[in-house]
Image (cartoon, rainbow, N blue to C red; front, side, top):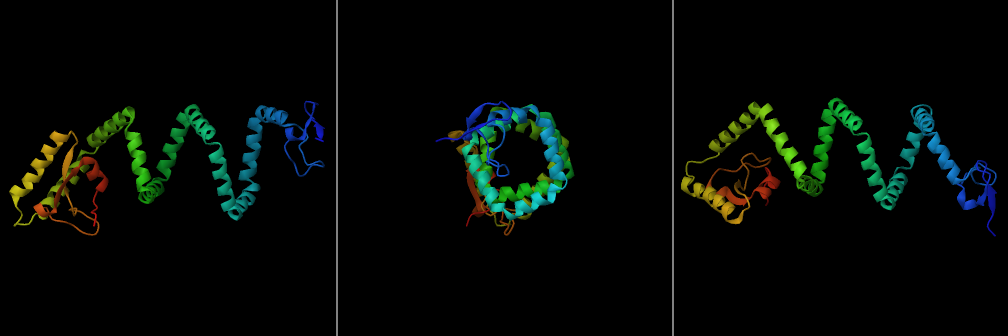
Length: 248
């Protein structure tokens, strides 16, 4: 036999499954049904939020912090399970929330970055280093969008115009490194052939190819020479991904 209970708000007798549990009450359930409680929360959203915020920032701050430390793994697991069950809802809600508060979110993000620039940069570098594949996939997906690609190209052009001196310094440093790394015995004609072959491959395949130093001129642990024995032809994509590294 299913027990029933009368809601203190709507005065309708309903099954116990229509009430949220409350261990402090005599029967173990809330006095108002779920639908009435939901309507009340929606009608008093601002006051509830203000009250909760006051508690979190006041006397409840230490209690909440201690609870989170004590139940760190349980909370992490609970959030993961909740996210998996409500992934679509959370994504839709977050997108809508961002659109509704876009200007405020961007302003907050900009202000936070200015105050914590060093911390943000270090955290970003650490994440990219530990999640190289995920980061590259994320960047490729983002850049495949035509609107994003146009924005990036426009940003790069603007950044170059505003930082010409820094760009010139980098080019000059690169040229100097190249000059200093060129031994007298290097075969100039063989080196030129690498560049000619790279251009020919680009024309024949439609994929841009570049001449790369197998051992980079400015490597972290080892610096190579600018000679025919240290050159290879790879695609532009492979070259950008490789950076100042070499594969053993």
